[in-house]
Length: 582
Image (cartoon, rainbow, N blue to C red; front, side, top):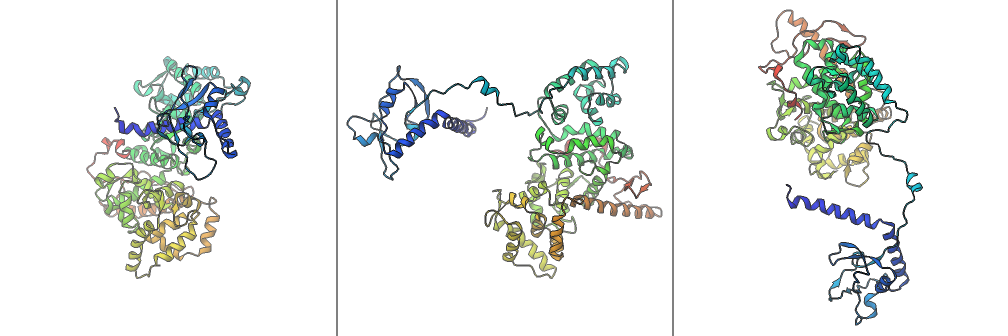
């Protein structure tokens, strides 16, 4: 049971809400307007006279709280002014700065506020039925219902499909036909199968499936709400990371573009972890770790799921499912994870990109400000799942999520504003690195002027998240303060070329896609060189393991290559997905 201290702010919020509701009532507004007109005209308000005119009044107790609406015939309140008091004692102030006190019947001084007066309540006219019906429903959390949807016709199609199966029971291999009968994308088959209880029994009967799907059609009216309903845990209206595992495992098992991965079952979990992190990186804009129907509607994730059926090459689906992107991310992590325990510490991460990231920024990353794994702060270790977020944010600082990622890191005090102190804190280390490279650093004052001209903050001297999102060159801003290599690259570029790049934004590949493509080509070339070396001797230090296929299709870039295999004593068959999602 929560303590009273925890309940107090909640109760205060409710009282404030009730007061605002009362204050916004038309009756209250009308009474306050009448009183305001009297005050402006200099007239006095005889509250006793008001009581005689209207038998219903709004009374408040001595603590300025709403008491109730009472019938004055049952209880006649005493007037605020006494006969012995001067005429001005019950007269409201007329806009002057004089402080007039009002005394109650017991001589106590009452505060001059709305809550100490009794206001006349006018009878509110009831809203006619025609007027109330003229306002259509506009909020549909589970999608707008379709007027011409014939549920019985859809159910009959499903029953016809089930009639083709033995005993009218569908296995996981049959669910592709069932998904198409439900007018769903092909890769909804496992969510449909599990939602009808097939994961427990190994099959789904026609009666259980029809009952499940009929209820889904009656309660969920668009693809986003249906997808969340099928994947979410019972009683939840959101998706967490582990909810995607069965769905993505089916993609790995059945998609033609991932057929070569079947033989490397050890890396199924790595690929699934990468895709899940990319889904939450793009879709979960609230950073809650829970994807809602609204967030799913605003993203293009479901469109990418539908494209899985049409596109045989998953590398063409670069936003979520690309195996080339997974290959790049995992190889970069493998290079840093020297002990191959699937975790890296601050010293490991500092070696990324030849010590380009400042130590102060690495400390901020490990402080837990942008990571979900609680062990990052407690044990000083970064998991592979958190590394996915870091690498994508580091290589593409133009997206909303990456801007939020680095803004959280630079906002030392968490006040939502980057102050000049915080900017100087990170710039000091940049100056030290430049001096060690025999490069004279720009004084902080001059650098600050450049950054303020670049960002153009709405509030002088304070840079907010909104300012950086509005700015088209946020990547230059961030690199200036914690990435020495990219900072020098920006300094050597032609300013006009930078402007041309910002104007052409959206016409080319994103920074992340360009980086992943270049790094993938380099890794494939290195692997080809390793193959030639392995013909002479075996290299035990190579992070690349069993050869899957020697075929290289350079035209479509569908390279079938050697998959990284950890050289450690870890039994990957016993690997648990939850380790990557904590």
